[in-house]
Length: 522
Ligand code: ME8
Image (cartoon, rainbow, N blue to C red; front, top):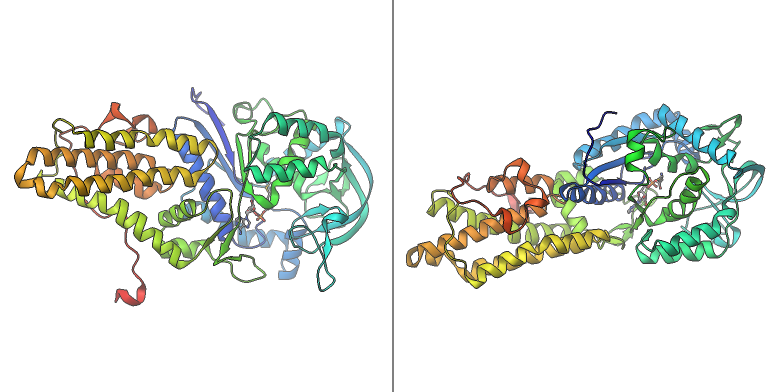
């Protein structure tokens, strides 16, 4: 890797790596979209961003799914991994790397971190006897499980657990309890949102037992260095992906030096324990730093029902994007669902957002104001006259969006950032209606020109700020006001870089289509 030296501050952000035991579902796409939005926001805000995603290809779950389908794990991967790669294209994910845990680089990296942990005295051989959930790929203490009405024992996530008793290597997790608790206390922003932090603190405070980190009853995984009979516990290998992608075990690699520790691991709430307890302990044991933040987002429910392959209500994200448009889907999920909370979606809710927020509020504002410039000013951005208090007020409100958005995004409150932008869009519509430039056309054309200039400038600012959530539509919006490609960063927001007069605009075209039901369309 040759990278130009950058004076920009580094920002390393990752998604979880999904199990490709099936095709991607909307939960996977949601996590990827949210992470992409944060990555794009940071890039536009002047950071040197590295964004990683990928697939978690080992483990018992993968093996069993393959066996049930009558194929080898590699055949299962050949079937499903291309769909995850296609999701990157389909959802316009601005990734820098896609890691697959079956890659050679990852084999080497996982064996290296294991060897480091062993050299540190944190790994010993014993016998594991306890509960394991294949669906979660997780070990659970007996008191975390319970019997359901059918007498089936379930883990805390509601998945069946099975009794496992075999020779296993253990990781001395118990030795890290105090250091973990101290880390949580000193870094209150390490686990977000707060509900997730409380959950983890209470789990760790309750006492940590050593963790079984190898199995001998199957072979689909990375062998333990020096003891091929043992296959590493899939989570040891999975978590290590985040450093493999930076060149580990070469800690002198340029990417590693620049981007580790990670700024943000974006994951779902069901896998917080792995990231906020096991992962820092593994890293410390290997002499590495813990990540700066782990954010556990909520779960998506289709019409209020939990999506799962077994329930059969998994919505294909590719279908959603084809039906409503990628940007509409990206906007819908990031605006509708408070990031960190669970969320629900339905056709009606998506259409309501598309038509109200996008087609009406933002789309119409652009269309109405820019077509007035086209019709009345030969499509040329006018020179504004003296600004009225109303003009000053709406411009100041727009100039204030960046600070509000940054503040929200500091805490991954993506929905607050979007609410701040759409508050300005709503005010801009009120401004436009109150100034009624169409009525000024005959009575006061100079004033009309000023109002149209102000509105076009608002479109420029909003266009720049919505790029992280709707990259394509925002680009088209910015094309309508002819903002050059190198003037679309957040450093161009505000009073210092107003829309220059004299710019010739293209004929405005609609950027946000209204959703019309197929039945009524014909
Ligand atoms: O957990 N709504 O993989 P995974 C929102 N391989 N998010 C959801 C979701 C839903 N309905 N269902 C799943 C794994 N997710 C491991 C990760 S990381 C080193 C290893 C999220 O395919 C889930 O919370 O089961 C996780 O963050 C991601 O999708 C991948 O889930």
